[in-house]
Amino acid sequence: MKSLSGLDATFLYLETPEMPMHVGSLNLCELPVGFKGSFHKEVQKHIAKRIHLAPVFSRKLAFMPFDLGHPLWVEAEAVDVDFHVRRADPAKRGAPPMTVAQAHALCAKLHGELIDRRYPLWEFYIFDRIKLPSGQIVGGFYSKIHHAALDGKGGVVLANALLDLGPTPREVPPPDPAHQRKLQADLKVGKMIGSVFSNSLAQVVKLAKTLPSAASTLGGTLARQALKGSGTGLRPKLPMRLAPKTPFNVAIGADRVFVTATVPLAECRAMGEAVGGTFNDVVLWICSTALRNYLAQHASVPKKSMVAAMPVSLREAGHNDAADLGNQVSISLVELGTHLAHPLKRMNAIMASTAKVKTSMQSLKSLLPTDYPSLLAPWLVGGAARAALNAYGKTGMAARLPAVANLAISNVPGPQVPLYLAGARFLSFHPLSIVLHGLALNITIQTYAGHVDFGIIAGKQALPHAQDLARAVEAAFREALSLLAPAPPAAEPTAPVKPRKPRAAQTTKLEKPLTGKAAKRPDTASVSTSSTSNSNSTRNNASNHGTTRAKPEVRQVRKAQPATKAARSPARRTAA
Image 1 (tube, helix red, strand yellow):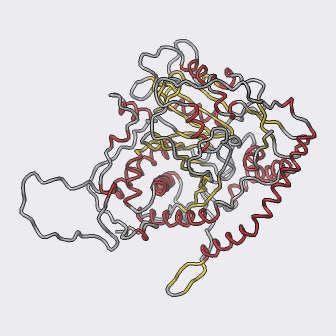
Image 2 (tube, rainbow, N blue to C red):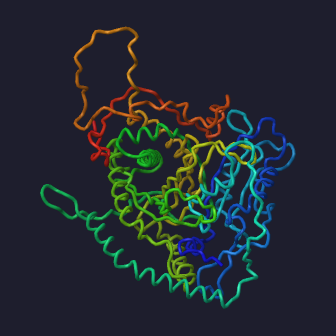
Image 3 (cartoon, rainbow, N blue to C red):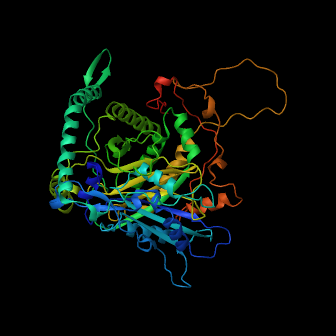
């Protein structure tokens, strides 16, 4: 008998028809050469053999008597593969294949629908035939799993258990016949109620033990963030300001819009090194620049910086247990510098903000709770808190009150090798996440097999020109490449030349020559997801949604590099 953690249960308590609390992804799949059957049927058979590999597939919810505490996970009596693995596109013989845009629209519709809580909290939808702009026919795999069952990194762990590294599915061991299954019928009311009190008592004791050290650490962290050096003294620094008003801070209905974009991973990492930052800083800059350009085109750019709510994983490095996929995550706030017209100043602002978040999370990571006392939580969180959140959306307060953040941005590191499902190779890994009243736009980024896949989902009214934002993401990458990418190495001379006395390169105050990996221009061919002859054309078309895929532009540009390791955060590039 395993109780949900407080954080996992909260996703159940706050769920409404307008705010489903599941996450998912859309994968376009290159079918095996000569494949003539039904991809849907092949996936059903494949998953039926692997349901026992991850408990998320076979466990369902059992609710406490009188909703006294968090629900429990119990084993389902049986898992109906036909119910959970459904065909998405029309099965009618002779029906034309869906376009990529039509597949996106269907995924947006499905993502706005609740998962039935009477069954295990997952659904897969299979597309037998999707037509790429090139004319190639591929398959599709849309998944949705309730956030109560897993977080973003947990989804990557689950994918590794479900998928294969080659076109031939690996053999998996059969279910252990000695495994003790805990069914709902086996639960005793007395034991269930007793577990609520014991769980709550344990949480209270745990909080009491950690409170003194947590208060001390939190106080020190806040004090350091509240003071900023100025000359020889310290002066108070105001806390992060509230987010400005944007079209994304509105109430939502059940209607969704979903679009995608893809850029190369190697170039993004190289740009992060070139500015003395990280891959995450570059991704945030791309999002910031795209949002600024989108708002300039369709609304107005706020005079204050937009703020992103960014999930931060609390999982230990190397965690890969498919039996433990619950949420281990916290939320941080990052200023995106959208009010700054100069692109390098915008990068500096982002890096300064992420540096503060990183410092804070290092101090507080071990103290941030992912659980809380279970007793009466469904009444307090699922009753009062959900009612307040609904009122916030339905009474129009979401559009009138100041917001803490303008959107959610999440960066999920994924596998860097191609993955296969029932013999079909995943060409893309575009995520779909959660939007809320007042936070109607979510951009989730997944790295996969040499590229960076952006999944953009929003309330339909909050993002009426969604495809323009997807194009803006790819355009922002190209702009970043022209401004931030390291210069290619100088060509070797073809003939001997007379030695000359070395002359110092003309640099700005904080520049220094690149060394190591940052000194070499990444080869664009490194983003290929396969060694097959048609891999590059297939990948380009798979990520194409009525727009062209962002491609690197190789050019010689002037850049400013950080002078020392200590100056790596923020970027410290000199603004021209």
